[in-house]
Every structure is written in structure tokens, then in C-alpha cells.
Image 1 (tube, one colour):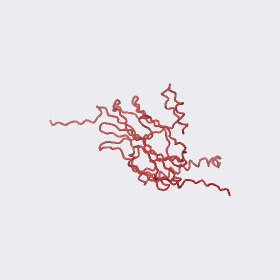
Image 2 (tube, chains in turn purple, brown):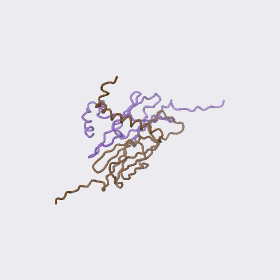
Image 3 (spheres, chains in turn orange, yellow):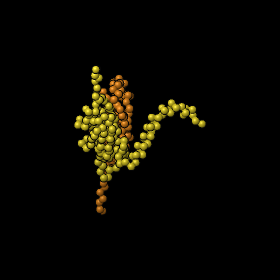
Image 4 (cartoon, one colour):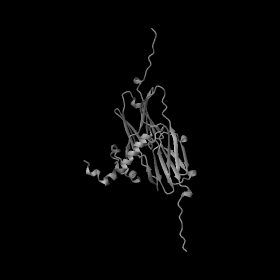
Length: 134
Length: 147
């Protein structure tokens, strides 16, 4: 496993940053919760092992992409004797509807959970129409 | 008519781990029906060393203060709970894939643990527990006398 992480820099050419994902690592789809509040759409993703430095969030046209890199762990003088989960990168993309204000998307990662706040644009917010008596 | 390779004992044996995995998966699925927690949630990896074992578990979004880790003899128990998102009345879910609720994992170690020196840390959603082997459990080298 140590060898695996050492191979990564050689596999990636600095001249071609767009091929960053040609990594010798597995790629997992993180589980997400998506819910809607009055002002925002909230997206919550489980990305254990990733932090603010290793998560990339991009919005291109109307596709929101979450990418996270996680380096495999290995403990010195220890051998893996039982395995239930594997460590790998994260990748998932979502199509945004027109009602999201792309400029104001905010992301916070804490304890391996990524919180994305996707604000609704002004015209899409629920408006209460006052009823006047004639 | 049976395909000849089905009768080939060697290739049947090659499939054996796969059958085992399938059987385990199905029994796990069945056992989950009446169990109030997700048996898969606390997926753990165990790294064995000479004098200790390192157990790692993926537990994103847990309050480490509320985790309950106990060691008795050679049994390690991890239990806790993951709180659901604070969703207010009127908010609606589109997607709900993340597990929440109480969970317990019990692991049997291959040695007697020194409960006093067990160390646990929680970082980036990964719990790492180092369980040292008890001094009394370590193998003793017996010198051979020459008469």
C-alpha cells in the first residue's frame, strides 16, 4: 500500500493538470443527503478521510462535481489482517437546476462530512402574497 | 447437459471464496431486517502488529465525545450514534442515503488487550484505536539450559 501512494506523483504529469484523475486509486461514490429549506438546497456527503485541502468542488455549466482525494493509510510494522472498507477517492456529480444561485454556493467540511449550501436564486424563493381586502 | 468445466473440481474451488462472500452478504441482509441498526455502518479495518493492533473505522460526522469504546479481555466494543441532520418542519428530503442512528460493533482480538493503554483518536471522520497487547499475554522466550 505504501508503494501505491508513492506511485501517484510519477503518474501525474505537472504539465497536464487535467489528467489528475488518472490516479492509481479506487474511486468511490459518496452517499449523500439532499434536502430543501426555505432559502437553500443543502447537500450533505460522507467523505471520511478527506479534508478541505483534498476536496475540489467545481461548477461547470449546470453540473456540480465533488472530487476528493484520500491517500491510503498504512501503519509501520503492521499488516492488514481484516478489511471491511477500502480507502479511495471520491467522485460524484449533480445536475443543478436553474434555480440555484451559482455564485453563492458555500461548502464546509468537518469530521469527514461535506456540507454544501446551494442558495436559491431570488426569483425562485417562496413568496408570500399579501391578500388585501377590497 | 452439464458443461465439462462445471465438473472440473479445480475451477469449482476457485469460486468458493465468491460463494462464501455471497452467503455472508445475504445473511447480513437478512439479519438486518429486524435489527434496529445498520450492521454495515461501522466498517472496520484491523491492522495487526507485533505488540498491538490498530483498528480504523469510518465514522464521518460523529461527536467523538459521545463514542463509547470499551475493552474487556480480548473484546473491543465500539458504540455510538449518528444524529440525523437538523431538518426543520417544512423542509423536504430529495435524497437520503447516509446512515443515521445508533450502532454497535464488537470485535474479538487475537490477544488479551491492555485496557489501560488503549488509545483512540478521531480525525477527518476516521476513528483510529490502538490496542496494545497485555504484558502477561506476550510470548515468553524460554532459554534452554545446558546441563
